[in-house]
Image (tube, rainbow, N blue to C red; front, side):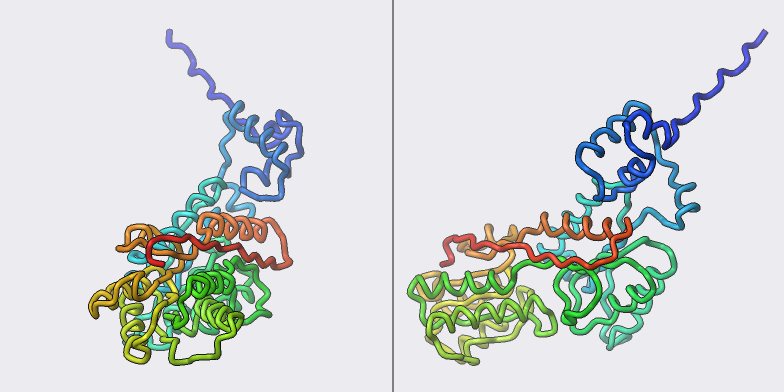
Length: 351
């Protein structure tokens, strides 16, 4: 005679986890959804109870009840060539992904760069991203590398989509949270370092003027020169971008204008590497003839020849704070928060 099937054990409920952890049901809910609004002691008690009872959140039921997907989007407003070639983007994607992995959320990466031929003003690509994010496919978004007065953050905010920006926006009145690094102070440190080392004819390889980070770094360069009693010198500034090619092009421009140049502050490590190549092509030695400073402290800086003095920005910390602020918004925090992380100078052989 066959035995009746053994009944499957009933899955533990949220209430049972709360009882085992000695906390409220809402506290358990906040822990399993990754909300930062939980004390370390309560989080530890809930995590121990979850592990002991074998509790598994029912994502499908929770999505139906809360109308949430359990997904956040990382939107990078740059073409694929930049995102996958430049160390900054690799670092920030890795940092964000690592921070999200500590929550119950999932991450999707959206590259949102316009085709200059098919979409010259970027409106089609912006509308595509806006439709996706307002269509319920993600609970919130992290926006990186905004150019100019990009309307996407304001549009998403108007639709009720929680948004956190990586970088300070041009519009200081934008009612969203953001995380930035001290670009101005970092560039000021770099320029002061060159001037303090006896360099008197120091130039700047500026980044794209439609980006706040580039503007702040150029302002820091100017501020350090002014503090040293040096006059304004527009011929010592060449606009490029954050790429190797842009740095080499801007370096050639500076050399043509100012052949006695003895130092240069670049907007990024890649731009600084481009400057090294342009200097080598005309027989200028680094650091003997021209000292070079980058910005980022990426792997490129340490492996350059010579290794680059650079401004380190805390990429891991930035990624963590971005996710933290977005989780706070998803948990109901309404007041925007603005975070500026410190930078530091890393001195190597190029100066």
